[in-house]
Amino acid sequence: MTLRTALFLAITVLANSGGEIAVTRAMKDIGEIKDFKLAALLTVFKRAFHSGWMRLAIGLLAVGFFSLLALLSWADVSFVIPATASTYVVGGLGAKFLLGERLSPARWAGIVLVSVGVALVCAG
Amino acid sequence: MVFSLRLKTYIFLVLIVLFSSSGNIFLSQGMKQIGAVRVGSAKDLVRLFVEIFSNGWIWMGIAALLLFLGCFMVVLSWADYSFISPASASTYIVVPLVGHFLLGEKVPPLHWVGIMIICVGVGLVRHTAPSTTRKE
Image 1 (tube, each protein chain N blue to C red):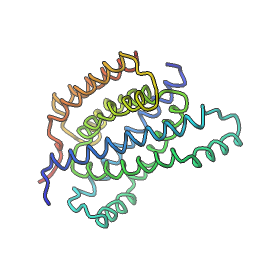
Image 2: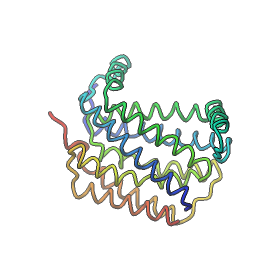
Image 3: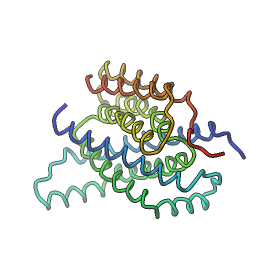
């Protein structure tokens, strides 16, 4: 893995984790969606996109998106996409400390296994 | 129609995997057509943006990823991020399979071992409660 690939991979992972945590925060503020009709969903999305958390999420996900685009222009999709799975570890920590989710030992074990899988993918 | 929390979470997980996998594959196709990114001046940057946003694969990728975002937002209104994020890792099976069989990319054996371990991890996560913060 070149230094350029490692740098863009780190930017992609951090920006995507942060963005997804911000999306979660925005949606938890809105509350559980129970009406799945298109009009109702559009109203929810409109409300969500007016929240500060969602604006932060869009900014971070845009950084992650363009960083991923750049990565995909020189690296194989079958390497890039598995390697970005380290988002799980960063996301698990973010969910616990920023969102107050209770991560059971089984969930942590799953996340650790995912990170081991990612290490193998990167080493391969 | 009323679905249980677990069932509706799984339905949205399938949609998330579908849209996320296809979105990444479409973007990859688009960027491979454009070639390696080299930006030496502002003119290069403008040319790059024009190339990116006039490519059909890129637009299909953006459409698929917007649908992914919509499903992701809906499911996160009730489910844990620490459940949804790892549980949606089936993308890591779908994308290398498509990369290998449709795009002709080489997937080394160790990648496959890593992908299988990721799947075991995802299996463990899927046996946990989809939400630990939900108020009844």
